[in-house]
Picture 1 (cartoon, rainbow, N blue to C red):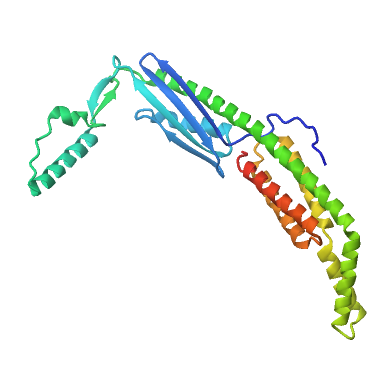
Picture 2 (picture 1 turned 90 degrees about the horizontal axis):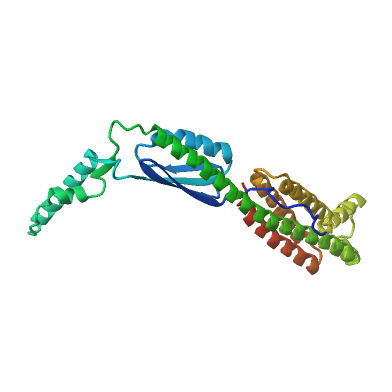
Length: 307
């Protein structure tokens, strides 16, 4: 069963992607960094500079409106222009530094190690003690609006990156589905070719059953024969595999967030391949079943990336 020749374009979307975007307004410059990896649901992790908490809610809303699955980390780096930024003490950071210096001094004195006292300039040099701040009379509203507008463009870039990755994924998965279809066809052909061998095996098993008992009622004999026939017949498994192939192709062509359904379908593929291997009456059919399992495992690895 060869490929269907369908167009593989933006049918599915990957959960993997990266985008960055920089911008600046009159008093500041910024850099957005968005990274997306696999996730069972939508997990948003935002790292925003102090003072820009107001943009978190609209940013989360914009991301949730664009993506349904994936673990997405968003980082915003903001640099204030020195001419516009003032400086202010961070009382919590200052207290932590002073407490730490006092503890170090006490421990050093207890060990007989005199230390020189830290000067004010040294204390202010500790990270976080002195931080940039806009004067109180400057409105941050226009800056927030500009940053949010740039965030919308960065989200578009991330969506485009995930779509491009999805296009490549679609080609890989489509080829794997075609390979499963080919192997399913080979299993059907092998089962038909070995029908005579299966019949001979059935006769041998029947002879064994008859040799183990002197008398067997017709109902019991019919039951045993039916059981042996079922154990050797893989028609149900190959029929289901063929149906799963068509379902997978339909999902792949439908596009949208089909990752969960494709993942479930690969589990069904695997179940049928396992049963085929366990029932296979010939070594050749067992090998086909093992090849099926290998391709299905590879396909499931790729499906894990689909939104």
